[in-house]
Length: 199
Length: 199
DNA sequence: TAGATTGTTAATCGATTAACAATC
DNA sequence: TAGATTGTTAATCGATTAACAATC
Image (cartoon, rainbow over all chains, first blue to last red; front, side, top):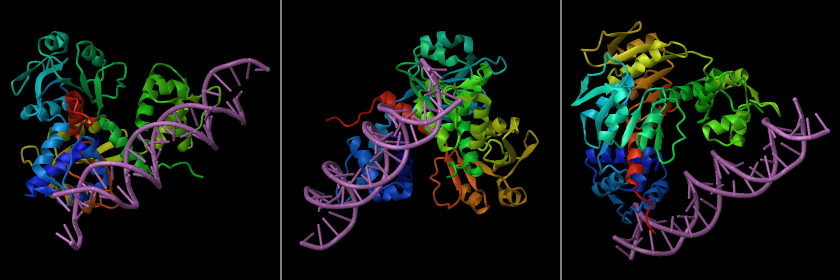
């Protein structure tokens, strides 16, 4: 799975470049992935090509989009309208294509009332009430406090977690983590060259 | 490595909670990781505990920070001052603790000249010239165009890539990827429940 | 001492890759 | 047909876990 989004993006690029036929070889080379890996990934999801031809690009894009669930729309709540929340709200707010921001919450009175697209920033106090009225599919969590519990309690089934919090606890809530700071740490680690233990 | 940042964050939490002694068991439980995994990870980096005791928390925090290279400072350039670039600039700009934003670039005349902390947003045209004057350790890339090439050419050795671009090409440039959209796709995939191929 | 916790070796598991017959 | 490319089986590789003697 991991790799599917990268496949899709590269396919878009091929498509844009006017290519209408791809081999696993070709896709693999562009992503530094073995062709055999790509065929295995695709066949795992029941997507097959033709020998001597490969895959038709429109067919493949369509297939991968379906695998990623991008044939559906998802309603999104942004929880925390700080700078990151703001960025994400616009990010998905602008195109309501697959991910459609429907609710935005923050605690800061200074930003409550602000409107993104057609969506007003509302008080965090209203979280439960508003979620009861409008179910969302995904909550994007950008506030470090334990609003996560409230989200889970309110029946949210997927959380995209931008905080450092460790969200296990919840049975049947999908968690996807994106700790932006961790990437910087990993780079720092590599720059510092800090050692697999000397031997 | 992957897991080190999570270890560190959890250790901070323990520390804050006043705990001054941790076992691999304890750390593992809180992160849903096997104790044996943790010991293996730490010993790999030459960090050892004491039987019947575990690890002293200050010692361990210090050790993990060193592993992650957080005993050094890193100079950062933010490339692209859109909403995400802006969020990241403030994120690291506010505390110049480990990651210190020194340069910010954008193409948009409307934001050029704006100042974050003490750092002015400068024209992307000045990229090479400014990087020649002030070396940076890490470039945070948030613009979808191929500024990546220019960064590599200008001698940048680490790129934190927020774009969908596939950055292989460069020998001896560390790349860390953080494609925010991919996380949404993965959630969508799980929500849609799209099938390991029926059998 | 007794026993909790370590570090490491060996076993297990899963993911990646190589090999190759099938096929368009 | 010839040969490029497929899907899959088997081999390899690396990462995780279990088992356990060492030890504080």
